[in-house]
Every structure is written in structure tokens, then in C-alpha cells.
Length: 212
Image (spheres, rainbow, N blue to C red):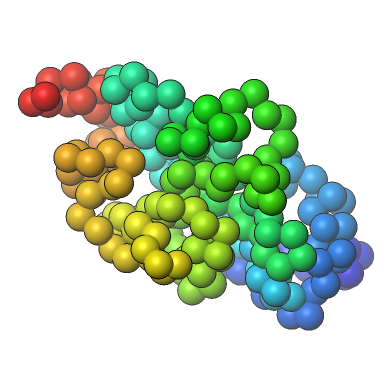
């Protein structure tokens, strides 16, 4: 399987789907490909999807992640960012988010080098940029991730897990009272013209000056 995969080249912005992949094969692929690869993998009951993100996807992922970190720093909220760490439901599912955060459950996994969803809680928040695969929300829901943010075509959707399914909501359960669906998009666009640092400074100023 691995030799066959190395013969394929997935262009940036494209995805490759492989069927009938066993869990053992998936684990072996993860081990052999390592963590330094640019591709993102998702596995759902034998279906393996390999995606190669575009450079602009990576830019958006980094900026949005930085904005969220800045928000929690300004609000003095402890968090742990685990980036694109793969989260697995052994034998069945695995997903690498574009970015993820432990917020409510940060203390539960503080200092842990490895996260095992058999005993540890899932991330409180996962981010997906330019989501095109319909399988991803189902994967996050199956893993029990309480909140999923989707950024697609210049818009942001906040999804909250309710009764095993995601429901679009107006406000983030992790950050109630903040109009993040609008506010986060402004510095993201601003970073394209004035640069990352100025956009982040403007966002931090907004957080500090908002009515309490």
C-alpha cells in the first residue's frame, strides 16, 4: 500500500480517495509518512482521503489560529493548541484538523505528550479551512468534538455538537457573547494588505476595547 501511495502525486488543492484500507494499513501509512508531510489524512471505516492544501489554505489556517490564540491570551483563558495532531478512534476513524484547541478541557490534558481518545477528551474546538469533504463533519462528530469551525469562500460557520450532530449556531459556545463570525474575518482579510502583525495588533486592540 505504501509503495503504491508513493507512486501517486496529489497536486495542491486536490484530494485522493482510496477505498478498502484496513486500520493496520492506515496506521502503517501514518508511521511511514511521518508528521513532516504537507498532506492531510482522514480515515473513516476503510475510506482513506489524502488532501494536499493550497498555500493560501495554509496562510488562512495560520492567521486564524494566531487570532484565536491572541483572543484567549487577551481574555486570560488557558488553552493548548495541538495544530494538525491526528485524533483517532482506534480501528474506525482518524482525522487531522487544520487546527485544534483544548480550552474547557485544557487542564485534563495539560502536560500529556500523547492524547488517547479512549481515555482523554477530544479537543474542544477544531478548525477546517475550505472544507469540501462531506465526511469531515461526521468524523468530528463521531469523535465527540464539541465545536467545529468551518471557513469556506470567505465565510465562517460555527457548528455546535448537539445530540451527536452539528448544528450551525450564531455564537461560539466556547466564547459566548462575542461576534466572532464577523470579527475574525476582518483581520484575516486585513492581513492580506497590511500584513500579519498589524492585523493581529488591530484584533488585540478590539478585544481590549470591547464593552465588558
